[in-house]
Amino acid sequence: MRIRNSISLYFSGLVVAVLWAVLQPAHADTGFRAWIQNFRGEAISQGVTGSVYDDAFRGVTEPDLLVLEKANYQPEFKAEVWEYLDSRVQERAITNGQVMLQQYAKELASIEKSSGVDRHVLLAIWSMESNYGAVLQDKTKLHYIPRALATLAYADPKRAKFARTQLIAALKILQRGDVEQAELLGSWAGAMGHTQFIPTSYIAYAVDFDGDGKSDIWHSVPDALATAAQLLKKNGWRSGESWGYEILPSNKGSGEELLALQADKGPVFALQKNFFVVKRYNNADKYALAVLLLSDRIAGKPAPIKDWTRPYTPLDMTEKEELQRLLAAHGFYSGVVDGVIGGESREAIKRFQASKNVEQTGYASKEVLQQLRGKN
Ligand SMILES: [Ca+2]
Image: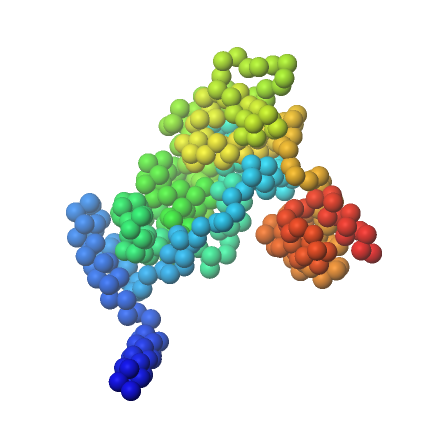
């Protein structure tokens, strides 16, 4: 009896606690508000004015929980090198890059002249970082940077030191007046604008290319591209030089470091200095290789002669569109038919494969296309 009583007491206590949490107004995270109040002194000691600090956090009363969710997300599936490159060095990214090459011809020529950095590499970085600015369009998917960084500093011990440093830099950006406070938006981890600079990199490299007095990587494409060029230039870009070249069996390179991301099954590249300069943007071989292969394609150069080895036969653009159309016709897909195989298309392929009782790879392959054609 006594046990039962204590259990019911326990449960009523739990109900009270849950109700208490539900009924609290959303601004009740006193710990977070106290953190913001405590950090004020440190920000001021590092040169941020009190009024900039107070303005930046006016109305910020609770942590950005989506930031913590994204910070803790561990993808269970690590992309193979061919998957990573296929989704980045693809027809749409190449043709869009060529359109931008014309649209910004004058600015790119001028940036190239002053920085020495190849314009096609800048376009490829723009593609990789924000899909030529497309990811900036939907502001509901972006985070207010001071709140995002304060959230990480407050609640993510692994990233707290990074976040504090970045937060000070973000506040200094506001203090410089380069961007309106409401426009200081970016990714959960603080990457901002067309070329996705974190605040300290912005402080180190930002360029006001169009001469309006602001280095505005959020809205000005020329500012963003010139800022990317500045980063590469300051890290040793060699003007007029290549990044490397494909090694063929008859040609074993001439003493350069080799990159074989798929061992003997895929293309092998001899790397030169500019490859390693691009890694200063993002320290991953496959990132740098994707940027440089995409830049070559935008410049009209051919793809590597040896292709990646994939566990299926790949489709061309027209076939990918046919695949999407057939998936839609059979009720597996409701997205746009554009030949770009993203998450939605892969899920549709998996649903189709499940209906056929075959392994759910989600690959846009000739094999899947043939099965879909057979359905008619
Ligand atoms: Ca500007």
